Image 1 (spheres, rainbow over the protein chains, first blue to last red):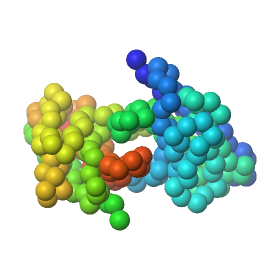
Image 2 (image 1 turned 90 degrees about the vertical axis):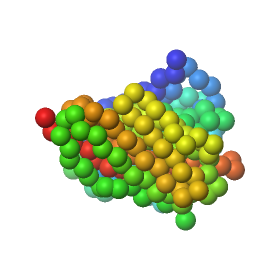
Image 3 (image 1 turned 60 degrees about the vertical axis):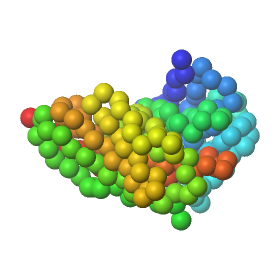
Image 4 (image 1 turned 120 degrees about the vertical axis):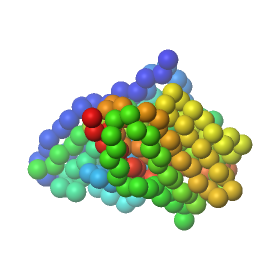
Length: 112
Length: 113
């Protein structure tokens, strides 16, 4: 069966520090991968999605970037965090031809 | 612009009671509609998924309906339990090769004993 992992589960970082969140998927190949952010009391905002290695699409201009170095690995990064980057970050995957999305457990990021 | 509107924003009910959550969407062309349950601090978990040709789908005490003509969906929860307290999110995906679903903001449900 397929599983999706995210780490770390929680993170507290000072303003201006770098960020690296990792997401990996097991049990499937060539998944579509997504990064979402969920601010408190808000809906999920799509940040990036990828349909293949090295293929990244950005949905909103921001302080973050994403990379997909391997088929089942998706990384969310920042060179310098802002206070507004605080939130709950979710990674998700879907099969190439199916739009059902499966979410990871999430990372709670607090920028202080 | 593709949009998904959910109502009510929040709902409080007593344990054992039924409730219905609403979802209206403008996503076109339509591929599928999904309902997710999200516990606080956790990732969303899929409850139901319906395509254009389906007008109802059940998952235990959860029953979703879809009216593709009026672009409306509902999620009915029967005999609510304390564990049903969560946010319920409606998600609509377009057809035509797009990989980008549109999420509603969710309905926050609190079940009191």
